[in-house]
Structure formats: C-alpha cells, structure tokens
Image (cartoon, rainbow, N blue to C red; front, side, top):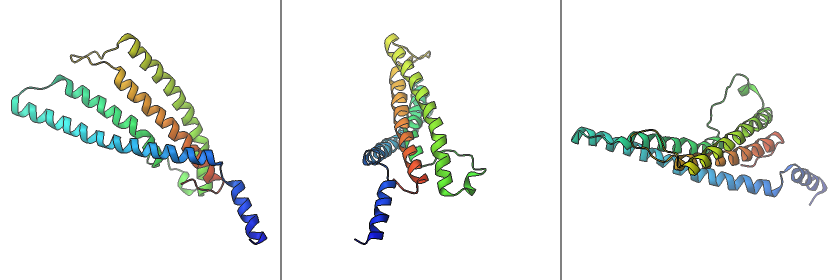
Length: 186
C-alpha cells in the first residue's frame, strides 16, 4: 500500500468511533425498528376496536364501557413504543429557523448538544415512570372508571417505551457525534 493511502486510512480509522459504540448503535436501531413496526400495527388494532364498537352500538344499541378506555391505553402504547422509532427516522418535530441554513456538520454538532438535554429529560421521565409503575404494582392501582382496569400494565408498557427511547437517544447522540466528526454510522 502506498504511504499516502496508508496515512489516509490511519487517519480515517483514528476518526472512527470504537467498534462497541458502532455495535450498540446497530443493535439499538434494529430494536427500535422492530418495536416501531409493532407499534404501527397497534394503530390498526385501535381502528378495528373502535370500528367494532361503533358497529355494535349501531346494530344492537348497546355499548361497551371498556372500549374507550382500552382505545386510550392502546393509543398510549402506540406512541410510547413508537417514540424510539420516530427518533431513529428523524421524523420528530424540529424548529427550523436557522437549522436549515447550517452545514451538515454544524447541524450534527447542534443535535449532539441538544440531544444531551433530551437524554437528561428522558432519565427524569424514566425515574418518574418507574416510581409510578412500582406504586401501581404495590397498591393494585386501578383507574377510576366503571370498568376500573389495573393501571400497572399500561404503566409498564410506558416504562418500556421510555427505556427504548433513552437507548435510541444515546444511539442518536453517537450518530450525531460521528457526523460532527465527518463520519457516518448509518
């Protein structure tokens, strides 16, 4: 190998993030994608449940008290389990006042800094969710409604969604860091 090519390759390898970080990003991206696809189908379940409820009400004149609450729980599971996939796809909301005019490296650096703040928020959210889930399990917390379902299952699903979101936020931080350094982890 020519000396110039060897120096270029050594510089590139020095810039690359370590292999464990690259493996972490790939693993978390796969998990986020799989869970995100599952969450997409939850929306179909939600639509089917509401359609069945409406058809039953129109044909028999009776309604089921649990359908609206179950629809709410399904919607919560849909957006909590889909949050990590949304971050992975970069389809979240972003204020674009100056951002579009910046270079890709400047955007990546800004994203890396701001995502650290989101990670801190996610950690606090996870702590609160964990506390709330433990409380619901310990005391058999039920919703105050005619149906009165236990709340721990949906709180546990929310906790899993927040945890997956945190994993994806860290992976996205590494991607942004790599982009700021002129490398891609995609």
